[in-house]
Length: 56
Image 1 (cartoon, rainbow, N blue to C red):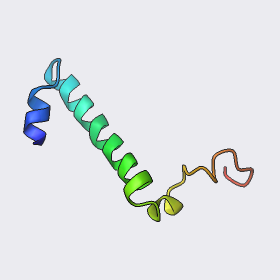
Image 2: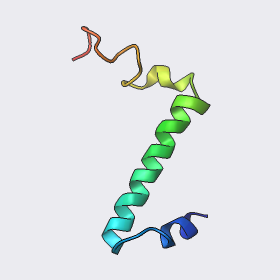
Image 3: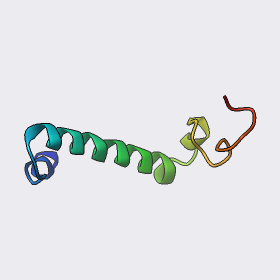
């Protein structure tokens, strides 16, 4: 499946690598946010920490 997606991405090789890494990162963020909500407590960018005064 990943080879099929990689093969159909537009642009030269460096752009396809960048886009595929961005898609993997997006998939990981979405999985943590929606499939594993218990894990979002351990990530620094949850709704409760954005704009918090005690975060550096």
